[in-house]
Length: 188
View (tube, rainbow, N blue to C red):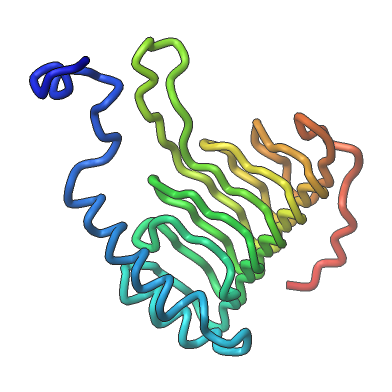
């Protein structure tokens, strides 16, 4: 049985985040549960207000739906007219940037952290994610940390982006592979 002293020095029991960050997350969790999640679907302005109160940088006319889960609003930046659908998860211990007119569909997962499997204590490793303007992360697709999704790129249903995606291209599969260029009619 571990003593208190053993617990203090056990690297497996060390918190991944400092106390201040955990307290901030606790407060956001309470606000999310009481004010964000139960808000009616059309109340996009209310939810963007709450996110801004917690440090999110959001452009005009963003559509963040009530069942979207944003881990750390203070690490979220969105351009104008960004949509984040119900049940999309943005796990962002580091900065996640969503460009103007980008879409994150239902149950998409933007995963901004992992663990270092080469270290026996599995410390947390976090990195940014960038989704450029006019890009679309389709339903149940996953974007790994450090990935940059180029302007107008589409990450198809259930695909997993492990590398950067070229602009105006369509990617599918696990891991995601480019299948064709996306038609770009020049309207922005």
